[in-house]
Amino acid sequence: MKVRRDFYLQQLIAGNNNGLIKIVTGIRRCGKSYLLFKIFPEYLKNIGIKDDHIIKIALDDIENAELRQPLTLYRFIKSQMTDDNTYYILLDEVQLVPKFEEVLNSLLRIDNADVYVTGSNSKFLSSDIITEFRGRGDEIRLYPLSLSEYCEGTGLRPADAWKDYYTFGGLPHILSLETDKKKLDYLTKLFESVYLIDILERHRIKNKAEFEELVRIVASGIGAPTNTSKLSNTFRSIKNVSISTNTIDKYLGYMEDAFILEKATRYDIKGKKYIGSLSKFYFTDLGLRNAILGLRQQEESHIMENIIYNELRRRGCKVDVGIIEQRYIDNNNKWQRKQLEVDFVVNEGSKRYYIQSALAMPNDEKRKQELASLLRINDSFKKIIIVKDDIKAWTDDNGILTIGLIEFLTDSNSIFTA
Image (tube, rainbow, N blue to C red):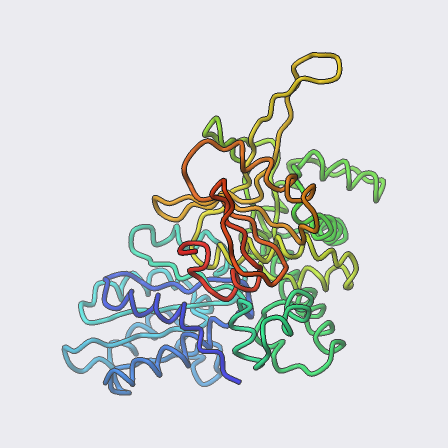
């Protein structure tokens, strides 16, 4: 079945003729080329754009090998523009062109050229690419399939798709594979032969085993507060080998640049400031994470938290990890302090939401535990608990919304309107 990816199509539509280069970024194999070369041209034709005003160039096609030279590519595009109407220029794998930045900057000077590009190697996937076009580029960040898109592609109901989705993730090719073994083999080979090699080659990392071990350590600790010192200590205890905090920091940055990982920084809610001591790391695609670990450590609570994070980011929200301090008197009648965590502090424009992820709340004690941090937040922003149970959303006397996971994942307005 076809996945329309309407959420991203609308972003491309919104960027029409805005004078900027539309740069589609995202982890490799998440569907960038399909969006730019299949979905978007279909839309353009449906609104009356003629074929000869849609210039599509797949630069990884051998037939277009000559166009990988900057001046040749630029002159070819110019030769196709024979009138003053808008031409939609779609370039795939643009990083194959040396000095492609100069080509794109030159195209920006053509009044009736509307330019859209994507690429899929480590150079292009680096978040640095937007810096090259600061003020002149419009980034459309593409994520792997959401649960809704996964269901659209498989025909499954969300509840029936959940286990496969959190196990094998949302890279689109997964939909075409019939068995669990084929899915795991695909993800394992993809990480080893594509993602890993890209990072090692781009950054000239000589110690492959060291880097791979760090990836496994981070994969095994999703949702756990950590920092470079803790990771260094963990590495030492597991491998009995020392790795510096500076090296770990660089390695983590490489994975973030390639969109494999995202970091959520801790935020002091009461003090209204960021705390740099500990952060959380989440995988952009859970299938890759699970393949790295050989399908071990399938803790559904941590995986659910990661998927909620990804969905919030997919919707364009800025997401931090919240901390709020609790003061109490201990058994010795002395004041003590401890920090309570709010899983996500979510900012969307001027709006803010505090969200807790709870796999289950089987009794009042567990609900009290999940409410503890939320009840100590004194501002008026919305507070939410997302539970795995398929329940009807309800709001308690404290104004805290409890909503089911499937409703949250499949209804983008669920926490904003409920």
